[in-house]
Length: 182
Image (cartoon, rainbow, N blue to C red; front, side, top):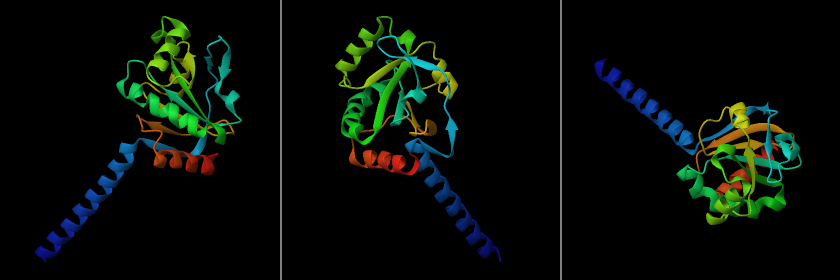
């Protein structure tokens, strides 16, 4: 009887280890697609001309809002691949925008534009979150975080952390999410 219990314990612990390992792998990727879409916050961002824009104004495209910081090394590392991703997918109804806090750019939009040029992301659209209100409304307090928004102006998920955006499997995964959620 004791050997049988010992065998069952081994099977149980192996199963737990396998399940935790699989969960850790999924968590490591930082992808969270919601079972039910969420309403978007109503806070605005500003474009380089000072125009107020609501996230819902982008409703014709599948939107990827990348909350980032100029002081975040992973954010900077992904800029060039994010730029390449945006160039590869822009004609397929996927729009990528960068959103950062206004206080990071004392030199304004020109400073941000030069920063993006330096790191190979000069073709990305960028916006300012005036007082961090949009990030706070989304519950985002770290970066990078990519919020996925359907063409119906609903948040459908998030990707936490950086990625090699221009790799074929990542692009295919985003196309799959877009096809399934919109």
